[in-house]
Length: 350
Image (cartoon, rainbow, N blue to C red; front, side):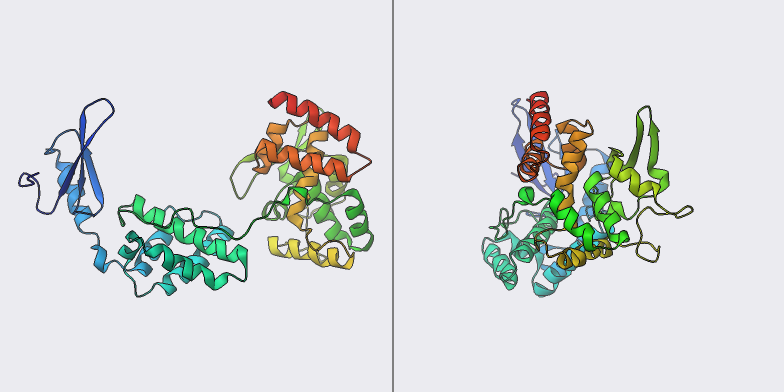
């Protein structure tokens, strides 16, 4: 198709719509970034020429190196929002950039790049979780590059994974908590109790303060905007959680602190629980995060629906039901009551 009616270098592609009409897509060069869509073969909108000028100024594929692509991604609005998530993302992105530092980004448009990607991930084959994490972050960068027109495509979709885990059956049972509380100091017991009663992640637990408490017609609740998903969670204050809150020393700004009354980091909170878990001789699979399974049962008992629990936890309804059902099986004292409530909850979402 002749292109003489367009600025030099523009590549025009005609695509037929389901309605039978045609729509034209314009690229800064063949294989370059798309900068315009129009119903006309030759747009006359002045913005068309401005968009072309901006797109044409982008680096050509042969000059656009992988480290530059990584830097552009980390500076974009597509980067992770949370501090912890961004730190993890940046660590893997820089490893990716360093390994492919001499390669132009355009190599990922070639089928052979999939093998190169897998060879890089294999550097962590001794750790399945890290092996998969490397690919997850690298592919996220490549997806962004395609969306932004830096690449026309890539061949690293759906990489095979080594790490498979289902933690739905890992929960803190009453027996686990009793053994833990028998040896742990008060500041660590408070952390585990709050986690088991709320289901909040460590990053949210360490920020809990009296301002999060609201009074309701029947009692009190926590109103928390979660750190990871930025969702507003309304969590009933159970009797056990009420004891943690009410025994917080007057004037203390945070509900959970270290032994000296100072602020905790999420890592320190998790490590504190891990250290005393080991001293209690409990399973080394138990983590602070696994208190969320116990919390799901507590929230069901407090009157939340299965859908509300799933939404709060960031789980599917089915996963939430599986966690609660397993908790009931391994907690004989609660089995009957929990399973009855779970059956009703399932009926509500069926």
